[in-house]
Image 1: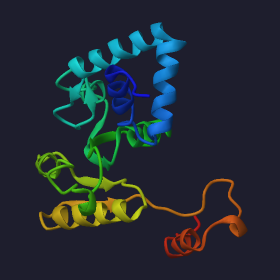
Image 2: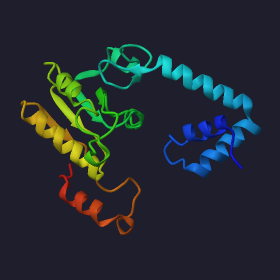
Image 3: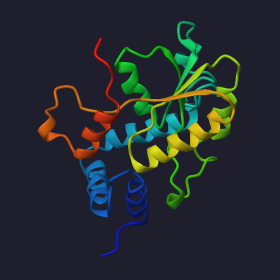
Length: 199
């Protein structure tokens, strides 16, 4: 039996979400149409509103409804520090620590040549311009410790160091409350290499 074209279009649209395959998309579509038409309408309106209202901050590249986001517009951040993160969720996690008070730049991804994501797709031209604005004294690379995240951090660090900009990388090691016997050997090795003196 053939589905109505509009149902097929809805299923195909839902498949654009990460981790949603054909069966999950079909279940979601059935749920929205059969059990929650009000929710479907709210979802459609919220998506349309977001697409119309949300752009990128001209300073940090994060999502924003204004040309400059609230975080960049506040005058109480340390503009000498620029922390580079992959995604807005990474920025949110760092903000929740209440330990960093500098500025950010959100790449909106990471280098992944196999997926067709190169320097242009992660806005490296904008990052370089921002890092060379004569205010920034240090760029902190806070990309993930994945193969792509490491490659991205290395690539960016080489570009910035060639321009005489101080670059640092967030540390990695044992998680708080973690037990050594349960930690993978790579993390343990890195914790040993990045050890520091006890004061």
